[in-house]
Length: 185
Image (cartoon, rainbow, N blue to C red; front, side, top):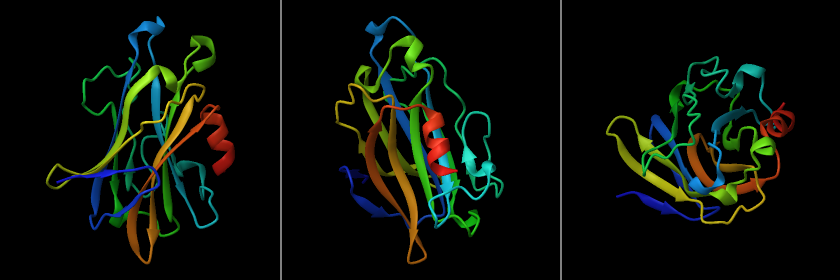
């Protein structure tokens, strides 16, 4: 049975291969399609990516150590009715030893032109699935009303005491993907 996480809650994984499924349903009344993008920043102990290739997004799908495979870019807004809109696969045993944390961000592409924000998105979640059994281990459903935010840190994997854990974050920002690139490089 999957654990339903609350904001800030942490869980030990005890797995080696996981899929982080991210989902959302944009409101159809906005008039324009939503293009939400899932990204992963693989950080060292200093809170920065060791090199550019540790930033996983639609233009860089694989980490240099091949431990993280980024999501295919769903440009239609993801009206998926409960299925993951984008998935990021992680082999925790293969992660470069310099990496101690992986942050998962979802941003709205071209939000300024389309006048979009996360207040126009509902049913947002991040979930951890055991790749071996295809069993959902934990899920965090974002319940906040991000009425002005255009990007959200959904969650993070981090290594503590030689074990990988997951934390539900749910932190909204009024920025685009470039903000996070600047923050983590």
